[in-house]
Image 1 (cartoon, rainbow, N blue to C red):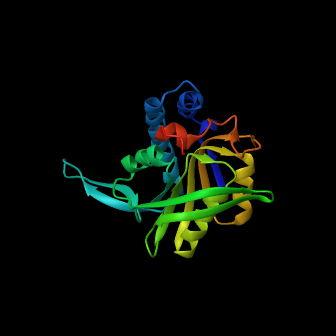
Image 2 (tube, one colour):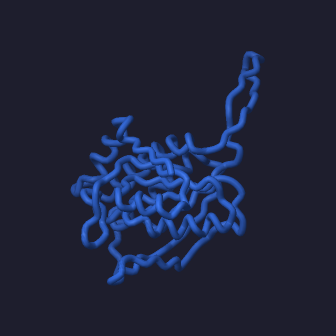
Image 3 (tube, helix red, strand yellow):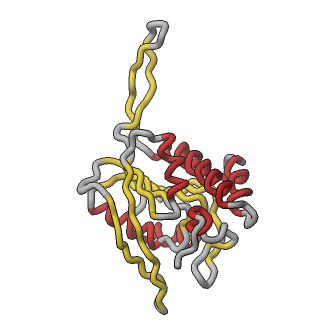
Length: 213
């Protein structure tokens, strides 16, 4: 499994995180910066996609050889925290189909169990899929989503997160379900509630502006 940490090579990642991590950033600004995070992550995921040559004729009548995706990637958002991040992806991949998965985390004495209670995905996926989730914490939700996509035929499977945790990345690597991860930053640990530290708090609450009842 390949992992790309954008912040290790491009300071734009840390500028975005400067606002996303700040507890004083309001919901409107948080959404906008998360959308920008999605756009940056979308650019970096392009490295992991299969491409083919495309010859075009310029206004001067000359032929130029460029590239285009072999197949627009299926972009799968994990509800509901991924919505602003997903918006950034659709700006770069406007013709991509969008899939949605909603899952809840059930904490048990033995660890974390994930229950998918809603999904809107194609019956069959031919080509690449990008799973979009702002926080790769334990990795269990993404692994569950990836497993569904593998069963539907998706390949390669790419994960895009604003922040990933080292334990979550290690867990995903152990599953063999994911081909690559692209993240702005790799944080060291999880707290007792499985939140990434230092992280940015609850991405869903901060993006949606509503705390669940």
